[in-house]
Amino acid sequence: MATTAAAMMRVRRDVWKMSKAGSWDPDLLWYAKAVEAMKKRPLDDPLGWRYQAAIHEYRRASDPFSNPTDLLPSQSDQDDFWGQCQHGSWYFLPWHRMYLLHFERIVADTVVQLGGPADWALPYWNYSDKSNPDAMKLPPEFIAATLPNGTANALSIPQRAAVQPDGDFGLTALEVDIKGCLDEDEFEDSAIGTSSGFGGEKTGFVHNGAYPGVLEITPHGDVHGAVGGLGGFMGRFSTAALDPIFWLHHANIDRLWQVWRDRNAKHLDPVDTDWLTPVGIKFSFHDALGNVVIHAPTDVADTSVALLSYRYEDVSDPFPAALAAGALVGGGSTVPKANQPAEMVGATAAVALGAAPVTASIALSKPSGPVSLAAGGDPLRVYLNFENITAKQVTGGYVVYVEPAGDALTHKGLVAGTLPMFGVVEATSRQSPHGGSGLSYALDITEIVNAMESKHQWDPNNLRVRVEPIREAPSNSGLKIGRISVFYR
Ligand code: C2O
Image 1 (cartoon, rainbow, N blue to C red):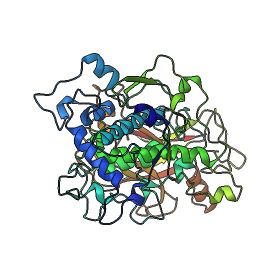
Image 2: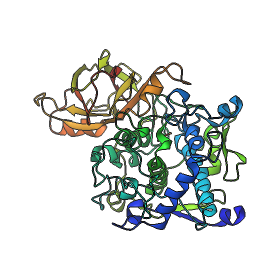
Image 3: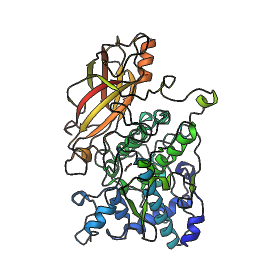
Image 4: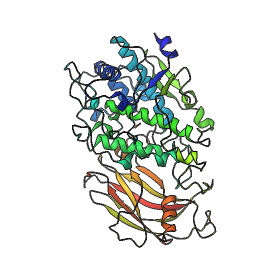
């Protein structure tokens, strides 16, 4: 059985194309049944639902299913297999791909055990699909209380943001805007003060690293925060993978890696051996037979190899026009992304965030080096950094506006991006590995600055920024940004 499964090419389908009003697609029904079966397996069973979620992170104190009869895996097994997720790192994409792969095979094996077909594949949730008016909603199979036979539906869980009967839970177009990530030309960019590229900055093994890549911020982090709300599973590392939608969200993130690579001949995975075959880093999992497997990113870079054997139903580029026109793709990429350090030209003091919008006015100075201004006095690239964001409790995401000079402060300004708060509590906690310094984000605002300049709304001495909650945000989360800084490059 295992060998046939390995040779077969699985097709990961778009969940919204599987979802037809009133009738369940067999693969979604099998998913529900397999989740139910996996939930019955004990905490220390690598093929069980709770163990699979613990691979992402496990906290006994906040385990919603904690039970006195639980047997925990040995400490060394916990060290090797649990709390492994790679965030704020160039390993974000390959690690989650490995994680999904084995999860998919465990579900598929469970489906076979339950009498289902051999070719079950993990669906993906394309919330950014502009051709589908329902894209940003939860598919009906994930909110229906029961399966067609009247038994409880394991895909529907109460630990989410409030969901309307039609699946709307308030996810906004801003949070699923993938133009920004797809326009990143580099997979990784580790220069201080700049965005971290499509896939994240170069790091060692990090559970919650400093600067996530653009894809990891939007849509990845935003979707987590929106589905999880203020107390749901998707909002925290330790519970995220207990929500069955987590896996469809990550299948889409994994799919976007392929979309990005196909988009432009310049879009390449790292060639650095520290990424391909890192020395001293073990990404360990259990396969569907329960055997330990260890992978390096190079093993999973191509989904058509025997180990992976899957493809996505649709990896077409949602913004192909720029390519057809022969234009360079990239946020302001008529400007070369100079391979030089960036320089800070202004910063605020600490900024507290709560339920109300906050406006900051940042005095800018001329760079004194290493960055020099181009002819005409313009920086090549401008980045807005939100450094060391910390919070004591889960809170919602924020949207950042840059306000053109001359506009009233009440004007909403131009959207610079979002600040999702997925992982903020973990990144704040000094107890968690690499924790304590909080989340940090760098948003590329070059295009916005160019647009303001062309309208004579750019003030080289001052930048006004407005940060406001995307949806409900508690006033007492203790949310604080260490500083907001502006870097030129
Ligand atoms: Cu490791 Cu979406 O999370």
